[in-house]
Amino acid sequence: MKKKTVRKVLFNVLIAALAIFWLIPIVWLVCTSFSAYSGMNVSTFFPKEWSAIHYAKILHSDSVNQFTTWFWNTFKIACVTCVISTFFVLMVAYATSVMRFRMRKPLMNMAVILNLFPGMLAMIAVYFTLKTFNLTNSHIGLILVYSASSGLGYLIAKGFFDTVPRALCEAARLDGCNEARIFLTVVVPMSKPIIVYTVISSFLTPWMDFVYSKMILNAGIAENYTVAVGLYRMLDKSLINNYFTQFCCGGVLVSIPISILYIIMQKFYVEGITNGAVKG
Image 1 (cartoon, helix red, strand yellow):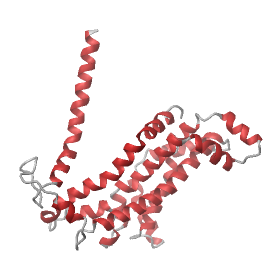
Image 2 (image 1 turned 30 degrees about the vertical axis):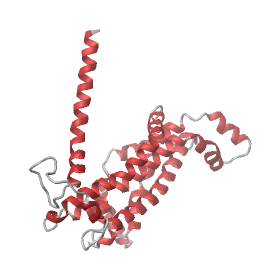
Image 3 (image 1 turned 45 degrees about the horizontal axis):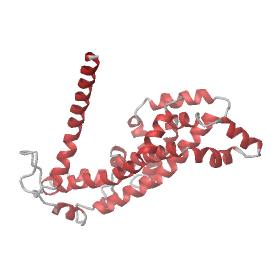
Image 4 (image 1 turned 180 degrees about the horizontal axis):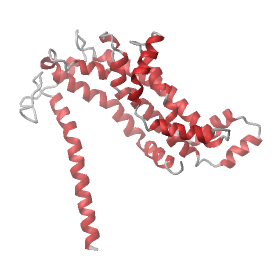
């Protein structure tokens, strides 16, 4: 009994230590965003003088800071990508879970194998493909990149659809429903948790991405930047002394919408993950 108690205490202490270690950069970012000093100050963890003036500055554009434009660009890209990716993921998951067709298992295995390789390996090919069709330096090109391979992330949604009673689908099929109607009227209403999980995951990818945004939006036109690229520009050697605190403010502001969304949808998000892990 004592060994079990000691093990539990040590486990909780380890979790608490890891949580504190994980929270330190976030706390530092938030505190620095309220610094009265505009440049980078690493001499103290907490600012010597506190001020919220830089939050007001970042919301008013100048020649360098166009945060509101960047925020709106990222929001549009994320919303369109979210809709397209969610449809792709759910349709692929439904097809692999419910329907039986030739090459089904080889295609599923191929998708799993492709997911083992980081998407960065295809960056050069993706860039030159977009350049061929004149889609670089455009938000449409970014949306295509984020959405094109989203169907490969079907596995968790498939696991959830595997738990949907087949009797309901068969009953609808006997009543004359086609697969599209079964999916929309029978399966989708029962799949709110996995839909919420897929929506949030699809929204997060373009919202947080830097690498593809930087690669595709490479013309240096500030008004076309996403938030990640725009904030990174503030860390340039010639700008960091005047814009570092605004950079921290931008980091805090970007995290607010997705944090609120996650808090509201947390119940469905966790349920979607756990139910989707029941079957493969």
